[in-house]
Length: 388
Ligand SMILES: Cc1cc2nc3c(=O)[nH]c(=O)nc-3n(C[C@H](O)[C@H](O)[C@H](O)COP(=O)(O)OP(=O)(O)OC[C@H]3O[C@@H](n4cnc5c(N)ncnc54)[C@H](O)[C@@H]3O)c2cc1C
Image (cartoon, rainbow, N blue to C red; front, side, top):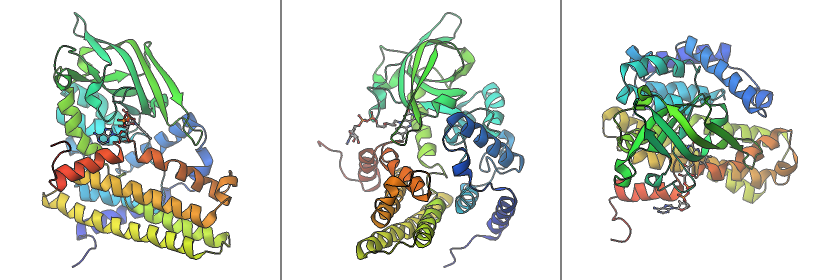
């Protein structure tokens, strides 16, 4: 069996590789990592450059500014980006969640207005789902959007853990529009302007010291009727239907960055002259095994996607194994480098420590480990729900 690219995909890979060899910035992590605003504008510039080269939105339909290629083709792009450790896109929420949602559910006006700005990174979007009392149980959300006589909405309430809210231009918001309806039937999906009065963003610094997410407070924020996505009170269905695109993000399922960081770990250990103990050799071996396993899983899943046999719950398996493998590589780094990781703040081990500190967050954001395990148990393995 040939696991290599089909001829058309080989051409695409060469195109991407050729462009990246001329254009990918080096040492970008050290350059801009510690100032969120400067970093965001750096990343906007990077995406705009990719967009100009025709390398953003490969799988979006041509009429919406994409190239109409397949998810397999898009995966090639992200593999190549991961292989050369390219900077990330500034707004994965815009590219992989809001964009597909607008293409599927948006009005023509919404599509014309927002899609080009997502592709060029003119707009950064955040995802306003979680609240202090609504995370895994999202349908418990209580942020209210009250309809006005002119058809607009007034939004009041609080969101939390909103990634990149401090730099976002717009928020993809779930809010309760019919408090009397059963929980899941009274929610609408709104496209909110973050720059207006009535929206306050309070960044939360995570354990690395960076404000990766925020609390967002809405106090009578205004949303015009043209920024309702879909029909009123149909927000839950929209949110559920695009959850699959979110969990399937090509950036999230991508094995290439894990292969790159594993290779980088090997290099950093060699260059630091670190002598491996039997325990650290085992930890590194286990990390390498997990990366190989993930590559095999990914190949199977890509085959299923292109063959039309993909089941949505596979995305939970993908997320779970990616997060665990990322954590396992960083645990191996700890085992091998030991205290160097704690004290080498500005050096190469400092970056490894920061990566390691993000691993618990990976296991929570986008749905916790337990929620993914439940989805795998019930939808992939056909096990009964708990309590039955
Ligand atoms: C890095 C990061 C980025 C995030 N970015 C965003 C964002 O951009 N936008 C956004 O809206 N949210 C975001 N979140 C929030 C995230 O979606 C929630 O934290 C997550 O859904 C869990 O919700 P919770 O924190 O309320 O925990 P809870 O739902 O209260 O869960 C607490 C514990 O109970 C367990 N649990 C809950 N229900 C069940 C169940 N049915 N079965 C078994 N165990 C269960 C959970 O697994 C967990 O261990 C982010 C979180 C992180 C860490």
